[in-house]
Length: 121
Image 1 (cartoon, rainbow, N blue to C red):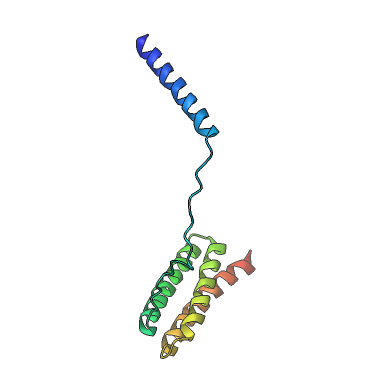
Image 2: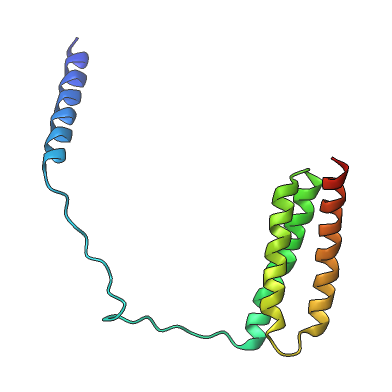
């Protein structure tokens, strides 16, 4: 009995504290003013940016293929679109023509697989 009374008292106390906290005005948190506190942004070198883009292109191609394998065709198509967008960024970098062609062939293959399925069903 005593244990139940303690639990009941704790529950009542929590309910009372919750009601009191609702009545208190919420403190407004200050936001960060980027004009007063500018962030230093490091620019990627062209070589580093190319490596990052290639990494994600390969990743999204794999994700698209795996999504297709699991018959999630809308998701596979979305990943293929991401690859196409990243390839367009890669095209802006110097000396990436060979990589671009290789990735385009792979994404066209994935897209054709997806389109073949869509036309069958």
